[in-house]
Image (tube, one colour):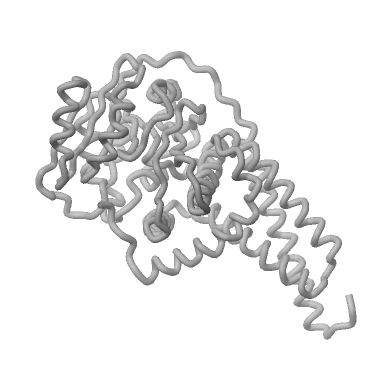
Length: 377
């Protein structure tokens, strides 16, 4: 290093130390937590004989229900019902459901004709749907989701054995053309890598309402969504964050257990969706916020200190070597994880996507402080 003032030398050394520390933190996430999903093997389960109630909330979802609901109703499972809560729809949803009920006797329709929901979001109609279900095993999905196949219910139900009361599944998005489609699918897979790996590590912190299951008794024992009813979002992740633990939670990532939905086609719609999703993280348990914050902050500081060290030419061989190790770890782990999630090509661009989302998520977080996220329907 050329001669520099003492203060500048100390500053450079601090930057280098921070770079090393955040590299270690990132490595711990990859090789202690994410590696669990990368090398996870699903166990062969006995075929479940438990009754299952699939609960779907719908508000003006005529087209989605027409396209997706038959694939839910035609599942190859012995004992199940499908509960659709039609929440003050103004389209032809009621007529569609009535016609379907004539064909499928196991379709149960719960009509909410007046908006009695004093709070925004879908927690009220979802609570009504869960309480209306006749079975203890509740399987959740959305009106715009379609199961991967006819064994979806069986795959999710089989995972609930022994002390397990929660099953976290994967809600994927359909592959399509364009950069936005790839971004949405990468982010979905990246978030899944985090929450599924943490669940395998014994620290479950969230699930997605597009595909997860839990017992009705667990819902009632914990008074449903009462503790966070005033928060618009979080009918899925905030409930799981509150009730999930090491002993009562497991994951299911067999290809047959996935659900698929169409991603947003416009950037504006996607950003609004992100604003809703990111608005709930601040209500997580403090340890989960610390864990997720450490991951995001270490990502940001790693790239920031790397750029500074390269610009100032500090310990370049070591710095470039560490960057190489980080990229190797990331690509190896992401390749295996995304292969399990049936996103086999997105891992190649993981470093570029990571940089993009660091700036985008920070922007969305700042935006949420300024304006309130758009409500559900």
